[in-house]
Image 1 (tube, one colour):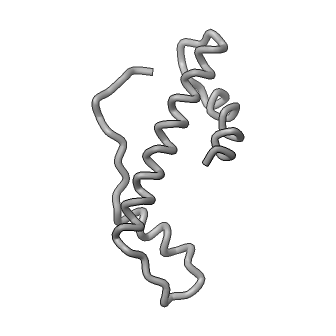
Image 2 (tube, one colour; image 1 turned 45 degrees about the vertical axis):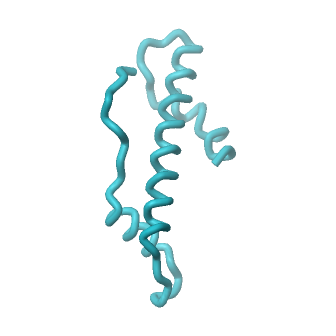
Length: 81
């Protein structure tokens, strides 16, 4: 996995719409701080998934990370979050 200086970032508007779509009542509001917190959580989740998938691939002596590596780490990743 090539290391890049680019940082993972999620659009606040996308996260806001995603979270709002899960609310059962239309009156429920979402603060800007909640959106920023969720964006940070998603960033950490994606970074952790990438690192764990890379380590799984390395443990299997693979040069490239495949979906199978991600599938192997996913259950524990979800339990950790």
